[in-house]
Length: 219
Image (tube, rainbow, N blue to C red; front, side, top):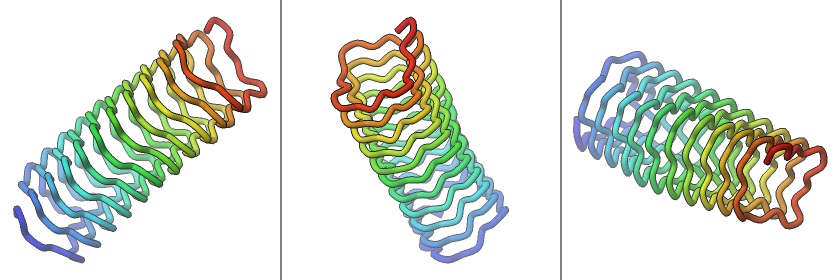
């Protein structure tokens, strides 16, 4: 299926596990509840496709474009994601556990209540998105940007965050419990009732941040 153009086609519920979809074009395709586990989707164009409930676990999504795609309750665990685009994708309740995400664009994506347990992010941009109530439990993040992002009630418990930018973010009720934060910026962010208990904070910036009710015991 490499390089094929399959725009608007209906693959809902189809088993395509371990398929080779390198460079395929699937604009506006219906892949809801499809089995795409282990597929190679490098450079695939999946803009605006419906992938609700789809299983992409173990897939290679490098350089793929999921802009505007619908990924509600989809499984992207154990995926390899290098230089991929998820701009304005809608991903509520997404499962992306143990994934490796490098130099990817999630700007303006909606990932409310998504789970990213133990995923590794490097140079990834979540700016102006919404990750409210998302779980980043024990994630590793380096040089990631959450500028202006809504992350109300999200959890970074036990995460390692190195040079991450949360400037101007809406971070009320966020948990950074037992997290390690190295040179992270919270400039102009709202952090009402944020929980930094037992966190290790090295350097960083809290200039003009709103910290009403924030907890730092043991930090």
